[in-house]
Length: 102
Image 1 (cartoon, rainbow, N blue to C red):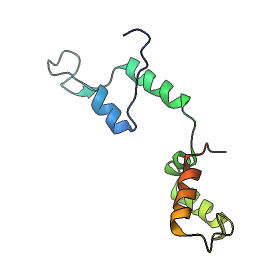
Image 2 (cartoon, rainbow, N blue to C red; image 1 turned 30 degrees about the vertical axis):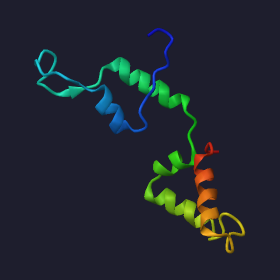
Image 3 (cartoon, one colour; image 1 turned 135 degrees about the vertical axis):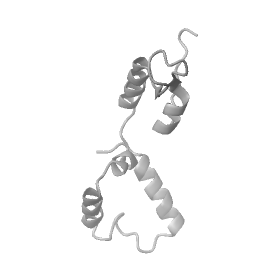
Image 4 (cartoon, rainbow, N blue to C red; image 1 turned 60 degrees about the vertical axis):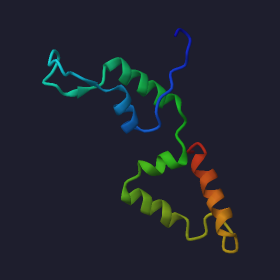
């Protein structure tokens, strides 16, 4: 339908499953699965339009980068968290992960 917004799945695995084409007639390939270029462009445009969150940044970190991030907190991040209940810390971290990365 014209003007209808396209909704994309949350993960690349779901995207592949949803938009893959199987060349069962072997007209274009040897029967391999593929995704049409226009769908890939739509996916990339969709991803670029989304702000990168702190959680996204962490997911892309190497082990060395993650170790550097954790070491930089000096065990006091968030500040003054020693007496904060675990549930509040979980809520804090969840909120922080959803924030746009700076």
